[in-house]
Image 1 (cartoon, helix red, strand yellow):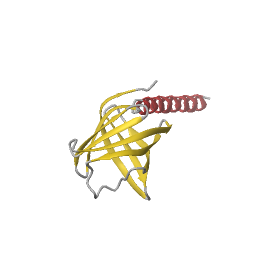
Image 2 (spheres, one colour):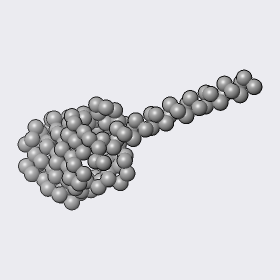
Image 3 (tube, one colour):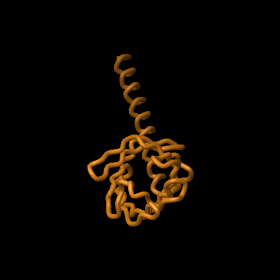
Image 4 (cartoon, rainbow, N blue to C red):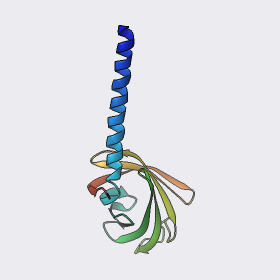
Length: 137
């Protein structure tokens, strides 16, 4: 009988911990729908400003600009449709009209990681530093 009670308590504890971790992760991801983010890319430091429907990405310390429409598919995935490119190098692989699918794979209070797919290319484990974020709700 004691073994059954111990097993039941262990199961309940594990379920409770999993629920807390899942809730924290979901809350974290919801806060990524709007905000300011930074990452280091091919041409140096880059920043992103994102609201509910639009993302502005400043590349190469603000020299180049990529403006995209944001469409959230669920709390962990969204699509970016490139609307405008300004002062981007001709070697930039992203073109106007491209659709990039972003899947958030990790999230904490200071950063998040994601995988981006577009034009038969997958870029994995890009880490973004969260500068300021907030829920869209």
